[in-house]
Image 1: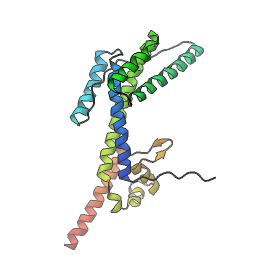
Image 2 (image 1 turned 90 degrees about the vertical axis):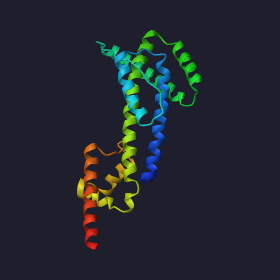
Image 3 (image 1 turned 90 degrees about the horizontal axis):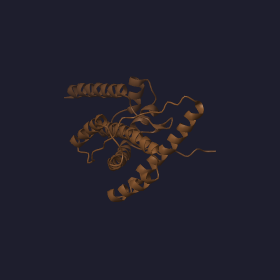
Image 4 (image 1 turned 60 degrees about the vertical axis):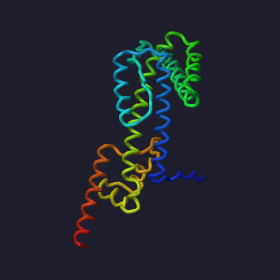
Amino acid sequence: MRLPKTKIMNVTERIEELEEHRRLLIMDLKGLEIMEKKIGKTPHQQEMINKFLEQLYESGARIKRVKGRIITSFKPSKEEEKQKITDMNDRLKKEFDELLLLGRSLSEKEFDEKIDEFLSNKTEAEKEFFSDYFVTVCSQKMNEYKDVSEEISMLKQLEGIEEYVNISKIAKSYFGKSRSWIHQRLHGHSVHGKPAKFTPAEKATLSQALLSLSDNLKAVAYKIA
């Protein structure tokens, strides 16, 4: 049986995909800001999240303030209690994630009403869990936003160079890797279920490779002149 072919994206298409992902993250952060009005918070967590958002404002991102509270955790003494809590937590996380996803398609007023409806039949313990999980999701979305933005920035710098640079040679000479390895990272192909990307050390190596290539080209250009 033949496996379906994976769509091969060029750098420009990968940038477009990441920018759409970043747009959805911003929508989620806006949704979290609306949800925060119904959920408790602490000054410490509020300060941490506000600081992050101020950095986004400076970069031009149009999102509202998101606030939260410190995370707490259960520490049951019995295995059956632990499993029961784990199952409950998984269910509540799924409900929260589905609510946040729904918020992408609703107006602020509609989403606010949906949150009220969602919380109306929850126990105090469940509301406390949502308050804690809210902070976890905020942190995840913020980190994901930063990672996606950094990858977009790097790929925009690399956009178009494949037409002029032997990427396979760079992969072999500077990384000791194959052509497919570097293309996986340039194009965000899935590896072990996650989009491949360069580590900070690999970014530095790639930068050095391009600088070295630039020096060689300059040397040749000066000789020609």
